[in-house]
Amino acid sequence: MTKRRVTPLVWLMFSAGGVLAAVFLPILILLFGLLVPLGWLHPDYDHLHAVVGNPLTFIVLLGLFVLMLVHSAHRFRYTLYDGLQIKRKRTVAVLCYGAAVVGSVAAVLVLVSAL
Amino acid sequence: MTSADSIQLRVSRYRPDTDAGPHWQEYEVPLRKEWTVLDGLNHVKNEVDTTLSFRWSCRMGICGSCGMNIEGEPKLTCATFLSDYAPGPVTIEPLANFPVIRDLVVDLSDFMAKLPRVKPWIIGAEDHSQVEPDVEFLQTPGQLDAYRQFSMCINCMLCYAACPVYGLDPEFIGPAAIALAERYDLDSRDHGTSQRLDVLGAHDGVWACTFVGECTKVCPKHVDPASAIQRYKLKTALHTVKAFLLPRGAR
Amino acid sequence: MTDLRTYKPRISTWWWTRKRSYTVFVLRELSSVFIAWFVVYLILFVYAVGQSETAYRNFLDWASAPWVIALNVLALLFVLLHTVTWFSLTPQAMVVRIDDWKVPAFHILAGQYTGLVVVSLFVLWLVTL
Image 1 (cartoon, rainbow over the protein chains, first blue to last red):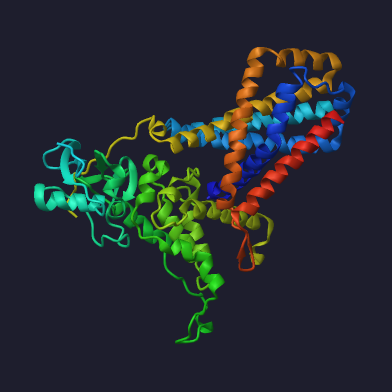
Image 2: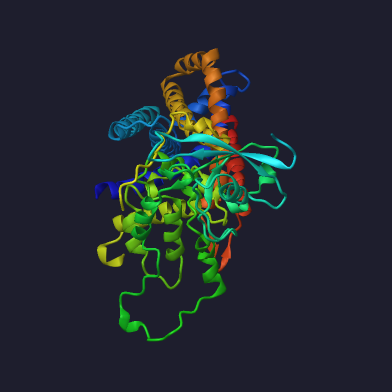
């Protein structure tokens, strides 16, 4: 009975995370994963610091991080079930969602420290 | 012997009383422009090898009994032309993901047990006092259009054969059953949504689906089971959110 | 029914290599790994920015290592696969009806790609302002 109530909510978070990843991640990877480290783009440090410390950025990034982590965990869980035919379903679920929870806690701590 | 006017059928054979597993047998059949794979199999059955077993009935894509895996793809054999596979050979196997009873005949009892669980019929209003006897239940073209696509299902089981999730997890209710549930849910005359939600919201219901989308691609009647399942997920999720937010009476 | 001695084949672990669409499906699902990776990367990035300019420079030194760049290129490709497949499946999962008119899939797709462009430009503007 509890499962029935939780599964739809996890799925809603999975979907929301999927939409956010589809819309936000391409530009974020392009900027912060490639262009900035490669030195093709030089954002001003003080400006970045101010953006990251803004409470609005805090809320947006927290939402992005948590939902995308749940999205990832949920999808990877089913990939393990179907792709590798893992039979220990409960263990897989605990590990996947557990990792998402750990990541979310880390995200909160880091974002608070940057405020 | 392979010539322009004949084609080889590579048919999977399995006889439960003598064979441990299936093996291939080849047959040469005439290649005619208007011959389907089913015509080829009937030629074998009538002229070459009477022991070959397969199901068929209407030959016109309505009865849904002649589904088989042709070159690994689930197809209605009455709607699949031999000439599309020339020069051949054409491999013909029983529908994937089902237990094989004999040759090309599969056991569908699993689906037969699942189908009634989703209550694929119109469930009337609980309060019968409001229903006039002998009254017509009229529908606008728009109301018909909402579910018509899902009413085209002929239970041919091609979607089950294409669905890797059903193959891996036989508990999954599966595409056609959920599409049929949606067909009645979307019907303006039906009041059974919450009853079906109990079945489809369970673990072996819509949540087992990972949206591979193959069910929709193989459907010979252009039903979209993948869409039905995702819409059901959204419906169930919103229902749950409502249950959390609203007090009991307001639901 | 008398008991049938049916034959039930076992599904191979490599079932998804049998057909192109199955392979694309598994690749699509594997995008989840790269999304998780980049969230972790972004958390480290925000942490470095929050610490000091030196920490930020050190992060960029680490992030410009060839293996990190290679991983991020791979992550970008997988995330683009995710974006394209997610957008194209949305019209199937969400049927929008306005009265009796069903909003065509094309409109939903166009809306999503517009959203992608708007968000990308906004992020670009916010960072390079």
